[in-house]
Amino acid sequence: MRSWQRNALLGTAVAVLMVGVPAAGMPLVAGASRVLAGQAAADGELPDPDPSCSTDIARRYVAGGDGVVHPAKDTDEEKSPKTDRYPDVLLKKLQEKHPGPWCEFNTMDEVTSGSTMTVTTDAYQDDGNPTQQSQAHALRPHLITLTLGRDNTGILQHVTTCMDQIRDHNFLQANVCALAVLAAEPAWTKLKQDLADILGKYKTQMDGNPNLVIAVTGYFNPYPQAIKATPNAVQLCSKLVDTIPTCTVRWMQLPPALVILDQVVKKLNTTIEGVVDQFEVGAQGRYFFVNPYEKFKDHCMTFNVKIFTTVYHPPSTVDAHNSDKDIGCSDTWIEDDGDTSTALPSYLPPAVTGVLLTYTQITTKLGLYPNAQGHKCLASLIYEAKTADGLLLKNRLGIAEAAKEPEDC
Image 1 (cartoon, rainbow, N blue to C red):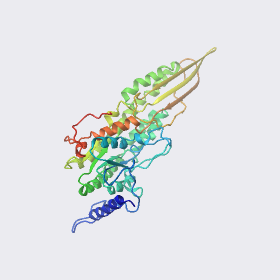
Image 2 (cartoon, helix red, strand yellow):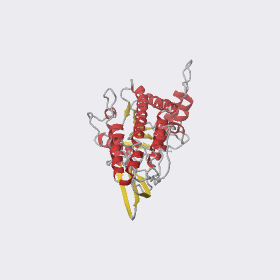
Image 3 (spheres, one colour):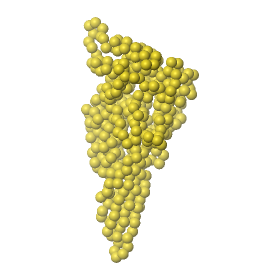
Image 4 (cartoon, rainbow, N blue to C red):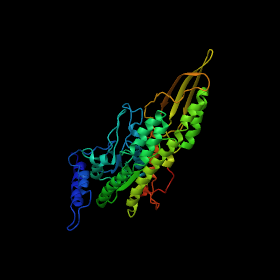
């Protein structure tokens, strides 16, 4: 085992003993057994830095969380190559600005194309040997970034089940799906409690690591805003001529679903921010919440829809009326997930005039992870993060710069 790994593990063992054993007459803190399990990393190998670097002289940056940290990518890296991830972009910024080397450790397991990878708050603390939480402790970093919470059961559905319903043009079902997520109070309570547990362990790390800084990100809304999707849906239907009314009736069910989905993302961010705020008080600029919601608003998924119809007009005329429209954003920061819907648009019959002979659709370019530009913006937002009191993350890391607008957003 490398010397820096051995030293880090020895430091972890000492920290575990200090945290796990209460002083005489003091009660054992609730969840202490999980703290011990979450911080013990002696049974597994700690990751190597990526890209490789000299860990003996460099500051360490640990990026962890869910698939946003290490998004799905093709095996040939044509989509979302590793260098597009926000931790890698942030690493370059730190290396350029700070007078000294940095090493990056990404504790999120690699996600390959076609796989389903979710990391819940439970998985962050309990899965793997060592776990993501224990790696963040044992590596003794100067900076930790965390993107976590969207994958929790009861919340994840707004970008999985609900998205599939939208992809198939089942907008009423998508609305019901989104409402169920918004009303899932046990899921929101669990997220709040688990995140407090995770950040509490970071606070324990700070006692022995006074230079540690924590940046917790919120989430972007991958869906288009209802106010912008509505005219696009109208234009989609207007080209179908003989099925404009039936198309319009269906697609006007989309905006209400988008409104509820937007509320879900806002609730996710306010929940995460509320927990971070509790730890930020009195932390002297060591906890930062980074909210990408506003910056991503005009850079949602593309959401391309093609509808094809043929209509028979007696006695001998057959017309083809097709439409091709992006319902979402043209300048997207969301990676296409590669899934395609060809569900029959059974809402189109009957035609206003004539007989509707054929009706098909192809819907593509939806997704839930950032593309390269989205990751650049996330990295810039973290780099320029500040507390409510105006304390800057980059200053806390020793970078003497004034506050600026995120350059890649």
